[in-house]
Length: 497
Image 1 (tube, rainbow, N blue to C red):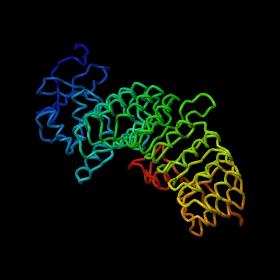
Image 2 (tube, rainbow, N blue to C red; image 1 turned 180 degrees about the vertical axis):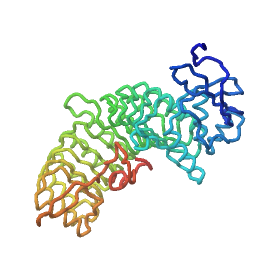
Image 3 (spheres, one colour; image 1 turned 60 degrees about the vertical axis):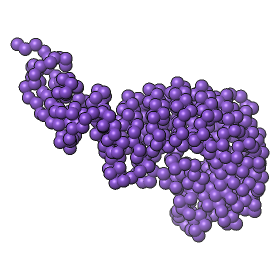
Image 4 (tube, rainbow, N blue to C red; image 1 turned 90 degrees about the horizontal axis):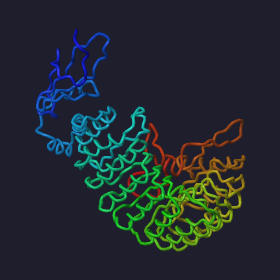
């Protein structure tokens, strides 16, 4: 009776399928072994004649179209091959060589990129977002990202990498830092919501000290905390190429917010900054005071997000005092704060003289009718530069909403307005229905659509806004639709959302 077989047994196979594969420079034998009764089937193995070793395969066999590929001399040659195409093949070879699990969805995405490279495309963004429907529940881990970084290291066709909503953790952050040091074509890197902590944030920030190519980095939702934020603030004192930095929902502390405000009084390359939802204590609105001082000094920043900074009327006055002196800011996001009519009066005074602001997001505050009237007066009679205004969920009633609609009739520049979440009456519905039907307000430039029931006009919500797809990408249609991301289309900083 034959003893049970183990994975380490060096037994001759009873049957084998021989094929050619470049990772061995010779033949691969896909082997099967005799099994005892009631014994589970062993995973298939790959025998490398050059090295005399067997490697367990995660997938049962390589893709059919690879069985006749010509042999290549070695890993260095495959790196050169990956730099001019063949990413799918190189990824497979590396997984086999390093005994890493082969992820079919990564193979499929790399195959599509190979086709784009064959067509002569350049400036390709490799999109392996974990929340994409094509991924089917799979996620990229830190170990998977190690292999991906090896594949991309010498590739000159890819200048963008999107791996949002995966499981990279600090392990993946380590390899991302290595990639930033060695890959000199990458201009866009999206690592949002990847469970990266303070240590991973430190590694990436330090890698950017010497990087001179990356333009846009998104770390949204990674809890790098105050410690990681301080490393990024220090990085901005050295790096002179990064143009857009997204650290929203990263649990930054007051210390790191103040550090960013201090650094940006001198840094003249950062054009877009997201500091949404820091962890703040106290009621002094200290973050707003420091960022307001920064805006007085900085004449380069184009886009600033200060969502969930607990801004009240006093803090809004600090910002408005700075905006009277600032001549660069085009996109201001102060949504999800506690600004009421007094703060809106200060903003209305700014709009009477400011000639640079084009997009303002006031969503989820509490301006009410009085605040809406202040803004509508400024827009109707003075301002001719603002293009988009969001007043979603501001407790505005019919009179205030109608006043805003009337300002659009005399203001030819204001083209986008978002009003959902307020208190509509029939006068409001009729006013915005008229704007849409006369063509003054395009249906793609607002978040409401009129419909009639029994002779009465109502408004329904549609999926348009300043940043509807900021945290996710739709499974169909245009990923960066201007109607859903109007803020970034009207005041663009970089080519990626």
